[in-house]
Image (tube, rainbow over all chains, first blue to last red; front, side, top):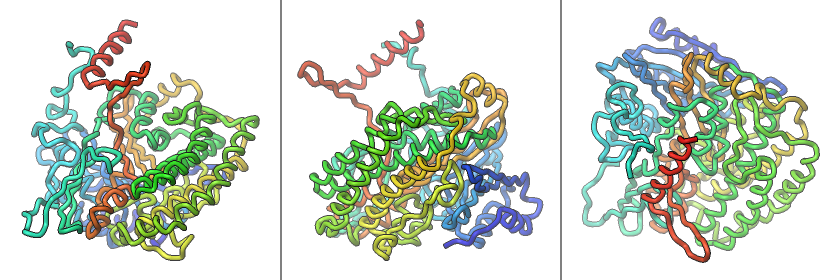
Length: 176
Length: 412
């Protein structure tokens, strides 16, 4: 179904297009079992400015599967990591492409990728409510998991003053 | 799925969050025209328990047991993906024998899960005799699970760096006995589901997901394979001992020669996978090398090793419902992982519901909704039967009991 690609080919494909906007490229090899068959994963940091063209470029290479987007609160910035997989459908051909984008906390905004990958909607809605990231152009702005009466401006995955600290009680401190 | 103003001919039906047709809480809002579904909206989060947040005060070994409680049915898959992520981040190598034992546990869970689903599916179309018949067979798979792990559901078998229980030579006859029973009854199961006229009428050409939609909406597991997308972590990548074994994509054309992407095809895929799982367990028992089953048997030593580690890792495992992926970020000198993100397969199979349900009839909602084998989590009420008296524990009572227990534990 999809073409088998080598991790070096993929890295070169993006490096040629975006050059220095891609940093910290890391190709990991992992072997398992008695026969020590190998599979690969790629990790890279990309600049926020090339995010949308990057996804477009990726779709031109091969339509990827977006597994999920995970996020970290790194203090001054919010890091989003898009976990794509490529080359599935071939034995040992699948490569996980982990693309990290850092957004400043002063303006945590990123473009939606739902126009290229419609399946990204669920994970983008989750990032909006959990990390307080604004997804520009998202087709559905509602919350996903959090109830409608959950307070505004509280983001459960944050580690700063907008986090959950004020909202929880320790069970052993609750008086009956 | 924006709220649309109703025209003269269409009306709205809410189904859920708690509804007899749904096994777990999820809320659907249907726009209906006569008997046909025009539009669907899905609302989630009724059982979101903040497990990732709860992990912030736990070390990786404690998280294993928390991960096990993400889902009652995938109580092996979540710890497995978490373990793979931690091993990826910390660079831990595991013994070869453990890799085979991990496959056996994973495949056994798949048999239990798929037969559970098959029973539920039969019940959804009102075929309850098949439900009892399927679950009778499933009972043997659970007995085997209990024999190998000591528990039927939450197995506590996975650990970082290996697995916790070995399969010794004297255990093999019992394992083979159970496997033979499953093999002998598989044909009966296949006949009951695939040759029956009623099942065919209810499931063929119902809830169709096209290959294009499956790809675009990032569907996973049997849901995407029934639409002809060849995607299976066990085949696509090399992890555990799957690289050594003979394993292939199970798509409906293996059996029927064609792909329709309907409910019937999803039944075919799951049944074929039950057979495949039995075969994989046999291959493992056959090829398993001897040796250690764990890299570092002392938890304290392992924890201090993990405390020194720093880095990010991703763990992926093919759970019964599809690819489960966990992301873990470890920071040096911190007990708890900095970030832990769980992504269960149903998360990606939410959006595919919409094209599946559109254009179908109201009566098909239960079976189409159940056909992706959704797994939301469990509700939290406890019923107690004591001396022929039956009563239910309320939320307040449960809370009071938990406080008492916590206080008792804190005194110790």
